[in-house]
Image 1 (spheres, rainbow, N blue to C red):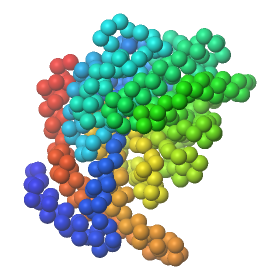
Image 2: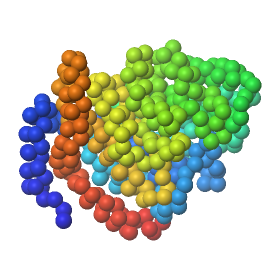
Image 3: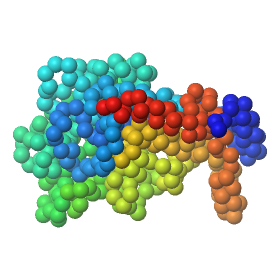
Image 4: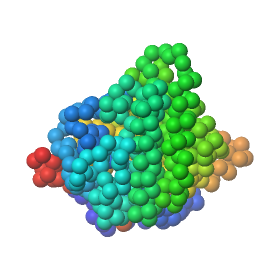
Length: 422
């Protein structure tokens, strides 16, 4: 039986009083939460397919499993699916696009010739939906990336093709940012690496640094475009050596004053990015997070409200980093309803932020500063059963999106009316 507005409001009033007793202002937490955009990734909606060539293998160490019906086949279908997902998520958010999702109305062009007009329908749609836009060059699913190397390629002509692609994408990102009135983060990730142990580790990294310098040579207005570089430990086909490692890109981001992108699935299974945030923000101004859920490897499962997701959110709030960190999602699951995957993952990210915001952080900080670790531990454990769910329900109600699991029925109806007919 669905909750009534009256019962939601009554539960929130009680929760508000409970949190006030430990110094937490839930109204302020909701207001802050509503101001935080999450960059939702387009590629969940069509299994990282894009609209260039339906026969092209994804490659680059990427793999999507499952065959759930209803995959978006055209830009219009993908935008319709995104609209449905956004309508079920509280807050005002962003869309993260890959270059392979160009919407061609005329002849198709190669990736090094892409221009803003190839994304004009996306820009127009984002303005209609009041969405910010972020962007990514696509360094996979292409003949010139088939051997596992792009920007670090030893063949000059192939490397230059990918450099030109990066240059073109920065201009597209700047055009997007100018059009929607919010800086576009143009994030570079490449799959370059080797399956087995290489002899020459130095050469590819020197070529990558030089290629990135050429891509970033033209200054762009930071109010339109922000540049980010994304690291990775290993991938399928690059288990022994990744050119763009964490150390490589950390050094590059510091020395070139770029954003560093940390992906939650791009490290050893026993590593967590929540512990890296406070370290890297000592040396770089801004950070981009791609929040994912790896299961034994970089498998990009739909994120859930697990310990690491909560740890990431708590670190951002406790460290007062929210104004310096851009939050994006990166998962793709073709074994479940794709619209539901967006909704589940994005709502979980927002829930994690809310949990962090209603934590009695100042009280905990005081206990820690005075060496009262007993009270710190006790308070942390009590916070786990505090009535955060009532605050979440009230936030959804205020945002005019379904409360609780009611959104699932909306998705099921959309599946029946739209997705099942594809």
